[in-house]
Length: 200
Image 1 (tube, helix red, strand yellow):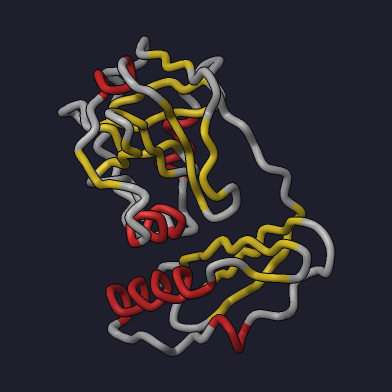
Image 2 (cartoon, one colour):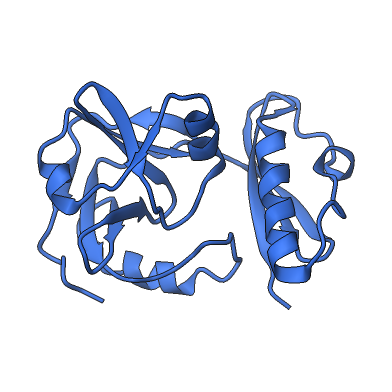
């Protein structure tokens, strides 16, 4: 049976944006097991540590299989190797070996950016992305994975879904990465390397 997980931000004893994690968990269970609503995060999660930033990892399939807290220090990637791949990761599987294999090709960069064979940009290995163009923040219409921060900012009207191609990375007004742990972080002076583009 497939095992999935949610990564939830816990800061100073408070979980953040549980509604969006619950929605994604329900969607995953409905798609893979034909059920939803069997896990209520509000009632299943233990109280997080009172002080500090923690990553709460919830492992589940048809029921919760484990809950773990890890102290978290935000990372600040600045350089990215753009790698071509048609990898799919629509659900938050515990098995990330295919993504890890792509990360092994990043060279000296901090992380990768995945783009498909048509040059459509997807995500980094751990975060959704956004570019600022024409005064607007745009995020890929078809990401590798629909993160909770991305969904929240789209619903708020702050992010606009649009097809983004690798050429757009060379002509942008701003670049940001986002996920549940870091929220939305604008990357100062991002650097993109295209030497490895063409890998599959």
